[in-house]
Image (tube, rainbow, N blue to C red; front, side, top):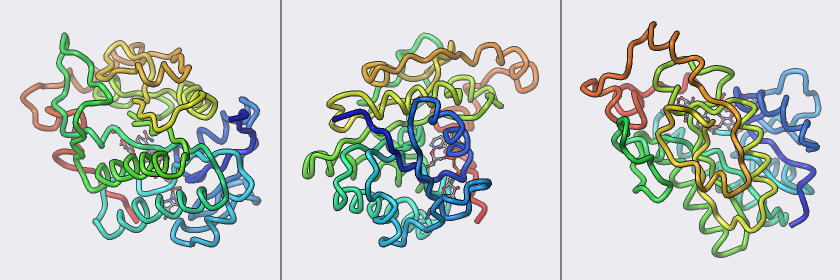
Length: 269
Ligand code: NAI
Ligand code: 15L
């Protein structure tokens, strides 16, 4: 596959979309932006819902690849998750198939394996072949997205990299995030690798920086050519002083998904 140049970025108005809008053009991509809400300062962005199949098809027409970030990014009712994340992702894949788009990068999540016991110091890192244990309807919808990606590879030869993103924010803001943090710069490196690696078929990769406290195995991400450069450790002293180390007896910290397993944050809309 020739290197993609024009990339559809769904969820462009969101937190991660905004970070990637700033960084990915530096890799030479022309971005087409898509979101259910207007993208600030981007009058050419497509404002449409993933439920609008015609609009989705028009948005994918002519692009070389898709980075699919749009959807409900926290826990919500099953009905809302069904519409935005499950049906919405299906509409996107169908449109991509119909329009001949051959590569998708899918924003999966750590919450696909959220009920995996949190690795303690000295435990082996969690691998991508660990059983999926979604911690929410949200995590379940990301698990569906990974299966959809596998189906579209097996049946239609459409390639996907499903990136199980940890926490991609400008800085880690909790002790848990010290293990999962994906710096925005490493996020762009990982998306670029996922867009350009050859013969990815359907690859599942964990998405984090090279954190000293990493919980999972970055082997499949590195196999794409991803070389993380950041580490959350410089933030550790301050966050640990403020919040304390994770208590193994605290149910909020017993699993990889953290408080999503106990008190999941709810999508506000
Ligand atoms: P966000 O909530 O800030 O942005 C999501 C965007 O999707 C919003 O702009 C929203 O308007 C749009 N959207 C929601 N439903 C839509 C629909 N039906 N049609 C069209 N657009 C719709 O989320 P964030 O943090 O930017 O995350 C982006 C993606 O990455 C999400 O899929 C999320 O699940 C995933 N992810 C993000 C992580 C992170 O650390 N930020 C961690 C793991 C996964
Ligand atoms: C996610 O999947 C969410 O989309 C993001 O908002 C963060 O909460 C992240 O997981 C996390 O686990 O920190």
